[in-house]
Amino acid sequence: MAHHKSAKKRIVLSKKQNVYNKSYKTMMKTTLKKVREITDKETIQKELHSAYSILDKLVSKGIIHKNKAANQKSKLAKYANKLS
Image (cartoon, rainbow, N blue to C red; front, side):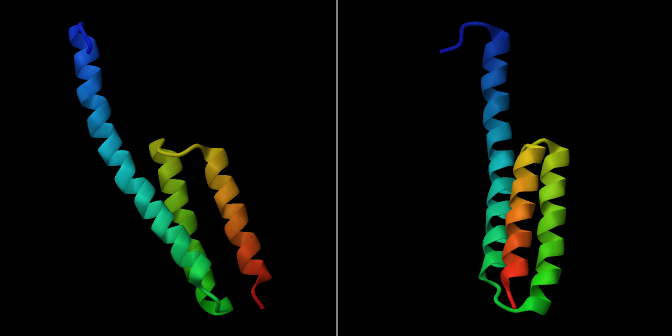
C-alpha cells in the first residue's frame, strides 16, 4: 500500500484512467471485429473509413501507440484488398 499522499492520488487517478481507456479499447476491438466480419466489397469501404477514424482518435488521445494503429490499419487494408 502507498504511504505517500502523492502515491495514493496516483492510485486513484490510475483506476479512473483505466476505466476510461478500457471503454475506448473495447470500442476499438468491436469495430475491428465488425470490419473483419464483412464479406461485401462495397460495404467494407464505409466501415474501413470509420475504423480508421477511431484508430486515429485513440492515437491522438494517447490510448494506443501510433505504430499499433498503423499495424491495425494495414491488416484491415490487406483484408479488404483480399475480398473480391
